[in-house]
Length: 71
Image (cartoon, rainbow, N blue to C red; front, side, top):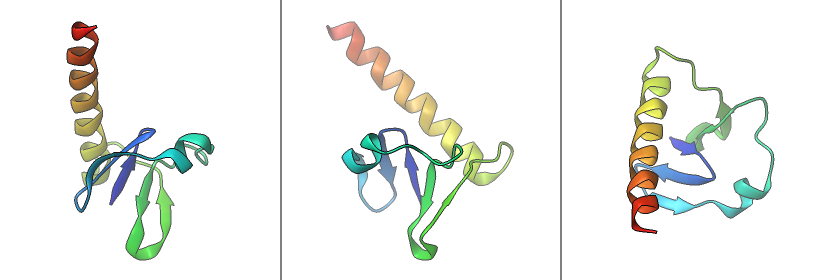
């Protein structure tokens, strides 16, 4: 699965900038892409997918906080 936040994390590729998605509009908050079925899904809270997205958001927030401290 891929979790999109303008930057992207996937188990296969790790962190990367997703320029095509950054320049496009997410459809109704569907920020998770499932490559094997070629489908975008909404991260429902309380599910494994939603919990993973929340954890990744917290990781991003932490990284951005550390980067902002260096500026």
